[in-house]
Amino acid sequence: MYINLKTALLAAILLAFTYFYYFGGRTLNFLSLGTVVFFLLGCVVILALTTLLIGLIAYLLNTGVIYPNTGLLISLVFVLLLCVFWLVYGFMQLPSFADFSAYRIFIKQFLTSHLLYIAVCSVVIGGGVRLFLYRSQQAAAPEAMPGNIKFIFYILAALVLSVLSFYWMKKIKQAPMQIEEQAYRNLPLAQQLLNTKGIYIASKPYYLPESQEVIILLEYPSSNKKVPVGQIFRIDKDGAIKDSLKTSDLTIERLIFDNGLLISQDSDKVYTWIFDGQKSALDKGKATAKRMEIIPLTENAKAVKLVYFKKTEKAACDTGAEEIWNGTKYYHVLTKADTLKIKLNNVYPKASDGQCVEQTLEYYSLDNLPYGLMRIGENAYYVIGPSNK
Image (cartoon, rainbow, N blue to C red):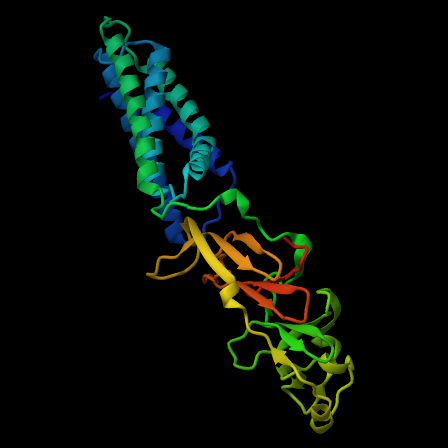
């Protein structure tokens, strides 16, 4: 093996190129001494491995195993590095995927991230060894060229086999899809009634029979049994937002929902806005006298049928030992007018606290209203009317 100053110099050039390629030449911020030691240790390991690789290639070139042609040498190094990088990526970084279209995206990401780096390293190693480490006084063995070309094709064949192998290894095992995927649609934004965007939790709806209105509360995330209300929406009999109110417009105190009344946690103030639209505080006795019938609506579970769950990846959240899959759920929703075919993507979005919050689908309907409501998780409501097919 040829280990000398020229070998170490080529390895140092590759180490510098690696730093500029993957880190953009930016100054790294080290948070601890351990991080500095780990980074330096990584540099030493890369430098040592690269030096050994260059020395081995120089040895094989000078002993006649590799034919002394620059293009052939660069090609040999390229296919070897490509195969090694792909195997490392496949075993260490390639995530599980649902189908070949997703697999193709990961292959493209790999090539986009590493192909140029591999090509430059191949030129530096192959060209550098041929120009600076080859002992030209030794006679080349002509029979080495056909063997080298065969070796390149063997590596390419192994690369293709590894691509196929990773497809079967990493492909998510799930039941075959027995539905026509193109027939299912995401809920359109035109039908979206409201979206909390993760700031609030949208409550289950309530119904006021006297005014034929639906009430939806947006509550603050809380572990308490009595959750403070942040905003209230009043939905008219046609499924449009008739009025809305932020509780901060009433008082700076925290308000709790109690059978239609808004009761302060910090004083005796009570608000009857849900019933009469009044924003003035009343004492509890007067407020109770204004209370009307308010009915908590129950989801129509029989109208919603999950027909297929297409797993796409492991959920990116802190699940402990439990394995949770993210993906797309396909539903049939039986409304008054039709059976809707709906799909929900990203059913396990990552919450701010790192936990998984499942995006469920709930359907609410009333016999005396022309529309239905669909709640997605605890974040959004959609209006489903006779014309919303």
